[in-house]
Image 1 (cartoon, helix red, strand yellow):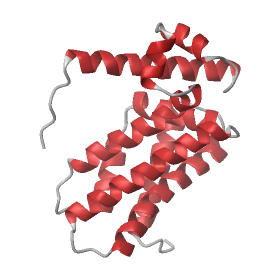
Image 2 (tube, helix red, strand yellow):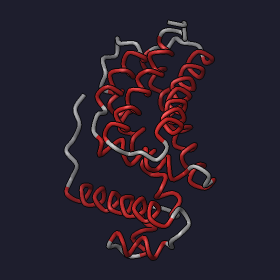
Image 3 (cartoon, rainbow, N blue to C red):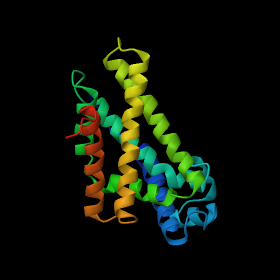
Length: 203
């Protein structure tokens, strides 16, 4: 599967989006979610208020954006796995390969910031729901003959494992975003999928 090189315009748009997200995470870490305005976020990102709204509908959506980004990247990697490989084996390969702290750290920070803040949490749940739908589509494209219940149950189980890993990581590491803590999060994600692949048999 080949991937086209993004155009200069697409690269600039992606860079602007990332600068808004980074500024939002930094402000939220400093002041708390809800402790700043759209205008303050736009100023911190070096963009206009209008430009901000070209990318996001609210500050909460910008704070939750890394969850969408992480899951979208995982889905793209999943699509590149061999079609004759089981979905759970593919998921393990993808999670093992997502070792870039620049990718997992914003998602982890977004998750931490969203705890106790319902608007951000709703966007994150939306990201997981959309990811489950895309996983279901990927399963159907690989195995067209599978029943609807199997497809929906498997895709939902993969997402549930991801959520569980995040919850356990949060309980263990609280607000720690150090490299060792992020490595632990990746290990938990892989372990959760390993349990699912083994049918949750007790070791």
